[in-house]
Image (cartoon, rainbow, N blue to C red; front, top):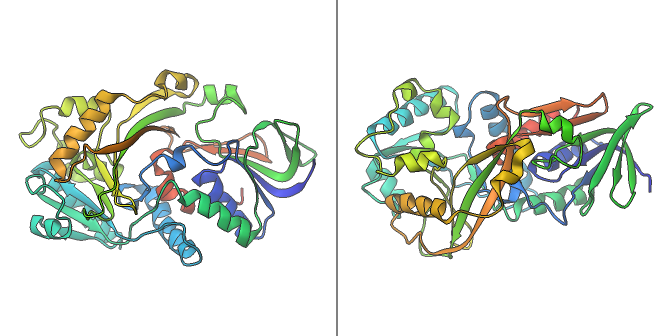
Length: 384
């Protein structure tokens, strides 16, 4: 089978699908290919938090634009966008200093934000433990999505509204260019041509250009997450980010007092060293059924050693996450209904973008920024 397109995109996660959205919106004929029966990778194994506030540089700008794009699409069809804002909660003076400094920075950026005292935070979020809350900064424009539904609804939308051709169960095993065009061959020998091919294959490094990926410097991060049973009587809306997140996110790392941040303070738990060992910081996001997604941890391996990470979950890591979560909230976080491991590709160079030639390009390694910034980033890059 040979069908002509302007653009073929390999990989239907957030990065690939938003590239398809922007290209089709510009009038291009787009084919979106997904190797699995539906996207099951990084895009669906996360919190669904869209939080530009935690990013810096151009990724903050992409995130701001992404918020607009999410709202534009939500106004046309329900892709599960909910605007309940984000709050970063400081648990000690060092974290509070960073909260104040980020507030000042975002005010200068013209990005809506509000500095909150403990009484204000506890009034808005009564499920928080008063002993944990020293202050916080709130970003009202930020949104949440349901990661197990958003991408599927987005794909349905771009197929129906913009005529994108979508093929799941379509594993691309070869990609090449000749005579000013590019072509992909699928397992089963289906064959498609286009002016350009964009490969947004996430952490799948073995099917196409494995030698290139093995020497790319890309790293795969494994994250452990869990979800509680539904707790509809507990109200903790929006994106809840805590003290360990303040110590981790790049926006805070650019603040003046970050260099003075210490990890051994009386206000921190005795098991902080163990938390740092596993890259744990605590986030909460309440799903529409009242359950809470809680996490996460970070383990790393080079692109050519992803199997070293394993696909199991470590009970000891989950126990550390729950122990810290119990310091922060008053509801029973130990009532877990499911746990899972998520994976995403990242690079020290901010994102991996590589031109095979004038007609084939690879974009992956967006890291943990995908749900927040992919929509804005893809708008700029969909016309390579």
